[in-house]
Length: 89
Image 1 (cartoon, rainbow, N blue to C red):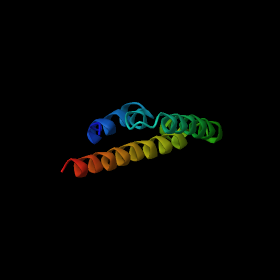
Image 2 (image 1 turned 180 degrees about the vertical axis):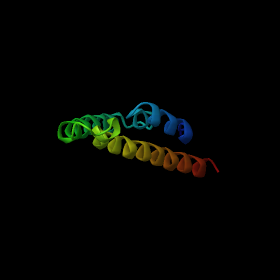
Image 3 (image 1 turned 90 degrees about the horizontal axis):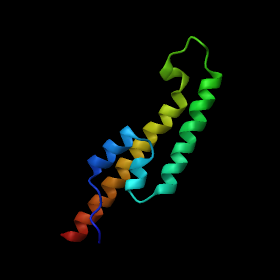
Image 4 (image 1 turned 30 degrees about the horizontal axis):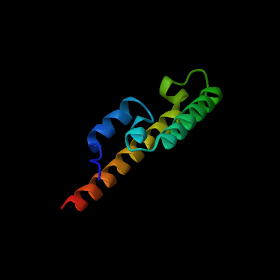
């Protein structure tokens, strides 16, 4: 069984570049789906937000999906790493 990537490196990657954590976990399609919904919800909140709303408020939908992608990538990496450690013991 191939050594899975370090979960903390997957976490850092997912924070810096959305969807890259899923790619490191061997789920590139899942990463693309997260990117699609980041763009979709970010664009939707941009169109529906009032002009005086801050940058974060204008793209809140995209940031929310990005946060879920970070959590998902880290969780999957931790599970894969724990299974690998269990099988190696």
